Amino acid sequence: MVSIEMKGRSEESEYEGEHESRRRDVVDDYGDHSYGVLISVEERDELSRIVKALAEEYRCEILSYCIYGSKVAGYARPDSDYDILLVLKDYKDIIKYVYVRNGLNASVLIVDGKALLRDAERAMLGEFVAGRLLHPYLPLLNGEYLKDVETIYKKRVVMEEYNTLIALNPLVGTEEVAIPAEYFLFSKMKKRARIYPHALYSYVKTYTGTYASRNIERSREGFIRALRALEEEDLLELTPLHGDECYHYHIIRKWRESGKMITIKEMLRGAFAWLVHSYAARRSLNFFKEEARSKLNRRKEVKAYTIPPAFTNPSILLRTSEGVVVDGDSWLDMIAKNLGFKDGYSTRFSRIGDKHAAASLCTIEKDDRKESIVIKYYTNLKMAKWIALNVWLAGIRRYDVSPEKRMMNEYIGARRVRALGINTPEIVAVSFGKRLIAFRYVDGIPLSDIIRDALIDDGSKGSIGGGSVASNLLGYVKRYGSLLGRIHASGLILRDTKPSNVLILNGRGYTGKYGVEGSDDYTLYLTDFEQFSTSDSSYDDMGWDIACFLYYSTLFISARKEEMVRMFVRAFLEGYSQHGSKDAMVMAAKASYFLPFYPAIVVGMIKVIRDEISSFTR
Image (cartoon, rainbow, N blue to C red):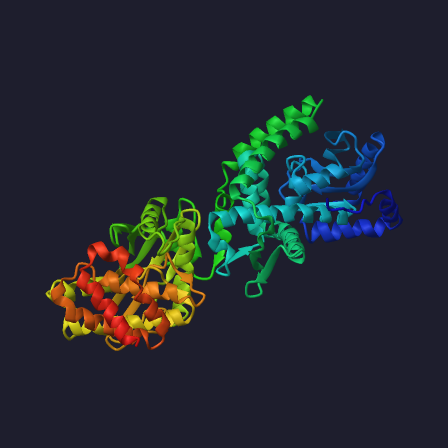
């Protein structure tokens, strides 16, 4: 258990010695300037009288007390109670609500100091008390004590919410995603409001309106303290994002826990919090009547408010290196807004890609403006394709199956490959909850179509860039070989090098928004990075990339195209050798690598490919 120094009457006596000046400091620092509420000298004295009387009644020492709720957050009505948290040492009843109707109206939540600490550490009271320290509070005695408890509580909140988030998608645990400290606040509030619905009223009133930014800042300060404390304990690494208030968190998995287990714990805590609430309010019929009436009025009032998106989908607070984070039912509206479309736009969807692709082409239009994006979904249904491939390739290759892992690979792969100066589609948006990535549409011809045209359809469909289909094809393939060599030389692998994942764009000097690779006649774009990975200089992985492309490209090619296939393989190897390793090319000729393609490839073509590789690498 983390220990907290129990400060009580000695500090109170010291405080009384500086009564007038310290009282005015509290009013100024926490009231008028910071909190936007004014606690008069008379009110403070009355609150002090109330808590002292209660402490004397229960014969306990006061460890700390504070005001929380509407008076501090800035949404109190004239008749609102003062919500007081009173922490007593060795309080035998553990926890109790006391309503005071003598002078100031006050609702005092009394709690034992050890019980409060255990609630912060491991939810002993279902977070019924510690949960109040998520939000702004005004300490009136021994504020350092409450700050220590708040930090302990928020450390646990950070760990739990981060584990839940990273279970949603491992991309969160990379340098591509930055998490603002307030994410943990909103994520925790969402869970607590789901179990404790009437709390939504105070959440909305606290974090919207006039004092929203101030209240968020106060809560954020506690989370930043918690994050830094965790970093000092070597449980995570904090990296500020461009020096602003957003942070990227790398979590060291010493305390890893599944998101599912955390969800179960939250449900149990919620149920226990209701029991604690009932126990704390025991022997107070008036309390139940007033609370019931108050909750009914709050729910009616909350319905009149528009709930901010961050309350229902905290993940939109995350910041990605490229593209915006969208979530919830309005994710498409968020994408359209980010692209500059306002109300009144229309959308059209159509299927795109091969029969295994879980992608759609979305066209957004308004007036004379049109934008097309490709929305790629990482579904469990598509997972069956990769499972089947793993069975087919047993002992040869193993592909990533998890939708979340494939989504992470895609995002990182598109950016890492583009960082090498190779064109990949621009990432427009990411949704962790919906498991999708939206890319800007690239209107190109798949290399697979050009291969089919040249080697199967005898060039009847023509090509781009001028010249014969065959000569153009060899130029494209050599260029692709060179790009793949550059990728491998940087320690990266694709693992899924189908020719349909390469797009050829016509147009002199066309390079696109991110394009830095191209020629006067055409530009190549690489797409589909679901199986992207680092190779750690494994020539075996690189060899598979080479073999996969060559064998996949020559499926169903007749034996009479043997000479053209030789030229095709040679052109690719010439391009690859500009940057790639000879050892990787040698590895591509492994006998096991042609076995998965054997049923759909002419035996003579297998021999052609392996002979050309051997000849080129002698």
